[in-house]
Each structure stands twice: as structure tokens, then as C-alpha cells.
Length: 351
Image (cartoon, rainbow, N blue to C red; front, side):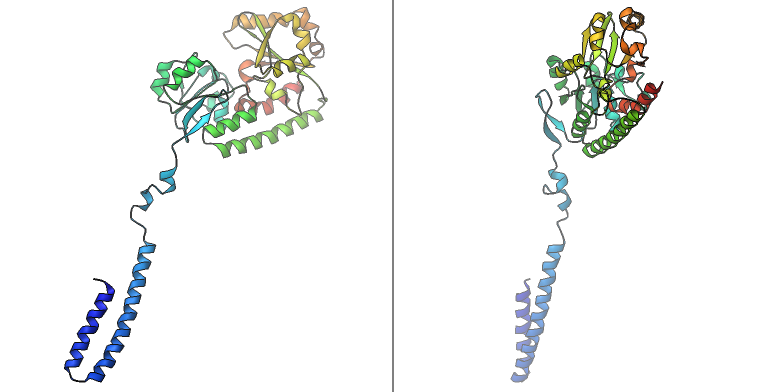
């Protein structure tokens, strides 16, 4: 029953009762007094009712479509560096990473469900990798299906492989030859780790600046050049450019590439096959030689033969004792290896 209707019923009832007693004036005064009291009571009740309606949300308010949780999208559009548009999860939980910079994921605290174990085995971060499945090299599609990924990151730009993987889960081509800062920022965006990526880069870059400053104090000269070489199976000699150790060495305050290597860098190449006869044109003031992985005996043999050759022994860096050997698995450009190199590089140069 409405409050106003209740008030009127009370007034009418009391007016009738008092008038029957025969004292009309007295009745009138009591009715007026009662009317004021009841009106005040009604107003209070109305205010209380309004307050209750305003303060008490519907029981299901936390689950309505207007809540931030309900409105938050599960996926978003992303365009990779090759122009592929794909809907990716906002917070991927089951990531497969197929590329040579797996250590990038570790600094962001990401545990992938699958990777190419060749990019992990014998690397400086191997003992930090939790249980993970090998997707093979080349990638085994059946294994990928078995792992039920919600995001696949792949270094290969092979379009056929990309199409096959895209049928399994959202797939993004990831540039593993890109500079470290760019890669970590991209991964932070892809994996929902933007703040962690930003903080890690700030910390790492500060440590790198301090390292190069100390190396200069130890005798490194302005404009010193450096080169990185390695042998691959098939007696093929390569000069490294965008890939691997050069990313560390060619720091703004670090070593410079030789003019010939700069040409390779300008061509956005990770490395380039050269003949041993061209070594003098690419060799810098300091030379880093990457020792092939265990098991690649022919590549190791080629390396040994090169380092005994006349063309090698006549290089200024060799004559000046500025040649440094390092296992190729410890020379990658991934973030975890780069952290390790902040301490290892000064030790190498001081030998």
C-alpha cells in the first residue's frame, strides 16, 4: 500500500472516531496534530526507501555486462613485422616459441609450453628452463597440435609453414634478428608483459653502459673495430652481422663494425657467407671466432685449419693477440645470454 493512502486512512479513521465523541473542536485539533505527525513519518519512510534503493545494487551487479571484467576483450588484433594481421589472446597462457632467441622469454618470466630445444640445449640459460616440449626443427605440426597452444611465435618467414601453423593457433612472425630493445618491447606487448619488459630494458641498458665505460677505462680505444666469424657444416665461413654476438659488440659505446660489415648490416642481413680469401677485408681490430657446436666435426675441423692458415696468421688482430674464442651456443643475442655477456665479455677482453 502507498504511504499517502495509509496516511489518509488514518486521518479519516481518527476524524470519524473523535467526532462521534461529540467534541468537534477537540477532534479537529487532534486530527491536525495527527496529520502533521503522520506526514513527517511518511516523509522519513520515503527517504529511507530511496536511500535503500540507491545504496543497494542489484545482487547480480558484479556479473552484469557493464562490469569492467565482463567488458574486457579476450583477444585483440595484432599486425606482425611482415604485415600479417591476426587475432591474438590478450593474456596468452600456452605459448610456443620457434626461434633462436628463446632466452628473451625467460627475462619476462614466461614459461612456454613448446620450443625448439636446439635453441636451448648447451646455452647459458639451459638450467633455467622448466619442463618444455620440443616442437622440432623443422617444426613438427603434430606436436604443435598436441600442445594446444593459444599463441605461436615463429622466427621463420616461410609462408607455407605460417599458413599451417595459423590453422592450429594464432601465429605471429617474430624478428629474432631485431635489436634487443625492439624484441623485448614487442614480446612485452605480445605476452601482456609490457611493464616487466620496460623495467628489464632499463636495468639492462644501465648495466651495459657501465660495462662499456669500464672497458674504455681499461684501455679500449674510440673507433676500435670488431668482427665475428664462424664456420658452418659444408666448409662454409660466415661473417656475422645482425645475428648473435655482434648485437652486443656494436653498442653505441662499444666496438664499431668494419666498413664491409657495415654494408652487410645495411642490407639487414643476419650473416653472410664469404670465402677465406676475403677475411682481410672484413677483419677488425679485434676478432671473435665462434666455435661450432659439439658434433659438427667438419665445421670444427674447418675452424682449426683456418686458424693455422697463412691468411689468418697475417691478420693484424691475430698478430696483436686480440682474438677471442667462444662457443657458438654462448654467443646468441637473446636477452638471457646478453645478461651473461655483461660479465663474460670483460673477462674475455682482459685475458
